[in-house]
Length: 248
Ligand code: GLN
Image 1 (cartoon, rainbow, N blue to C red):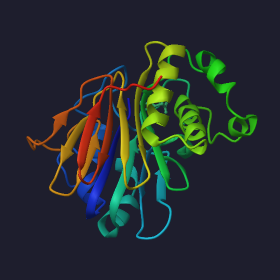
Image 2: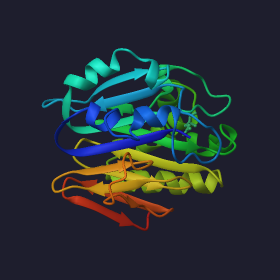
Image 3: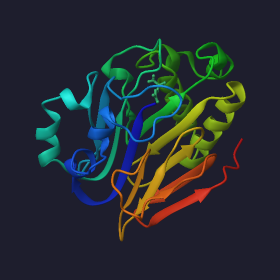
């Protein structure tokens, strides 16, 4: 069930998030410690996105396992960023294997990732998709549940919703339309990260001026805190806030 992470804080090399930690995303691609809802490894692609000092985030995505990519180690050894979102993918049965299906999905400053599955997809989401402009649907990057979730979140952001409402509203609407779905979402603009827990694990770690959110702790630091299910997390470099979502 895919694994994802987001970091905000002082500039760090990508490798300190991906491959240096004993249970970083690289290791989670072949030996995750906490898989739920099917799947054993996360070998169906990966994506890493980071914010340069100026401008919109840069993405590097591939359809292959993270461990088999020979370019990532070189990039990760020299690229520093204050904000990073990365994911490794375990494709849901029947969904395409293509690099455009690997998170993060992106528009402008926004980056998005989904860890989970929409039950009854695609039929269960037809009523929600009907509320989107046709152009949004025909220009979806790839026909997966995660890409459609991104279209639903993005539609709310474009309409001016704050990111916490965009995530909470989408989770509530999809949970009602497709009960039993697993909807752990991550959304960032490089300054704030919003995450939901709905059917999947998430842990958070606060540093003196940094914050990390990850599907599973990447080391045994006791500072990691497990986020309960059914919550919305809003994180900045100042720390994180765990809320009961109120939007519907
Ligand atoms: N269902 C999504 C996909 O296939 C995400 C899968 C996951 O979390 N394992 O891309």
